[in-house]
Length: 151
Image (cartoon, rainbow, N blue to C red):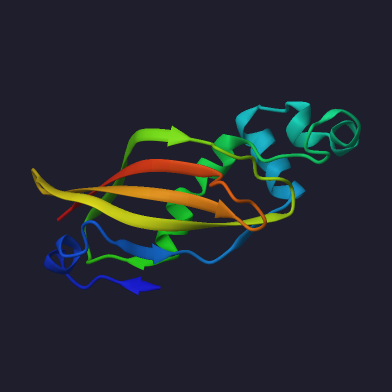
C-alpha cells in the first residue's frame, strides 16, 4: 500500500509508477455476476462448454468492461490519498484491451501518475493504469483514468 500524505507529495510523483496492486483472481462466478449486472451474456463469457468446443481460447474470458470496472477497487486497495471531501471518477481518456483475461487467471494493476492539475475546489489526476495478467505477455487493459479530489 502506497501512502501519499499531502498534495505536494502527490505532485512530486508525476511521471512515476506509484503503485502496483495485489493480484486478483478472475473466476467464473465473478464473470457471471458481471454478466447479470451488465446484461451481457455472450457465450464467450458465460458458457464454459461452448468455449471448450468453439472458442479460440478454449475457456471463457472476462468481459473487457469487467476488467475495466476493477480499476477503482485496485487503485483504492493500493494507494491512500490525502483526505478530501469528495473523490470522483471523472472518466477515461483512452482504453484498450490488448489481450483477453481467461477464467481463473489473476490480474494486477501498475499505476503511473501522468498529471496532477488544480481545478476549482480541488485537483484532477490522470493515471495510466496497465493491467497485466499472470502467464500473458501483453497487457490485458491499458487505460487513462481521470480522478478528481475536492477539498
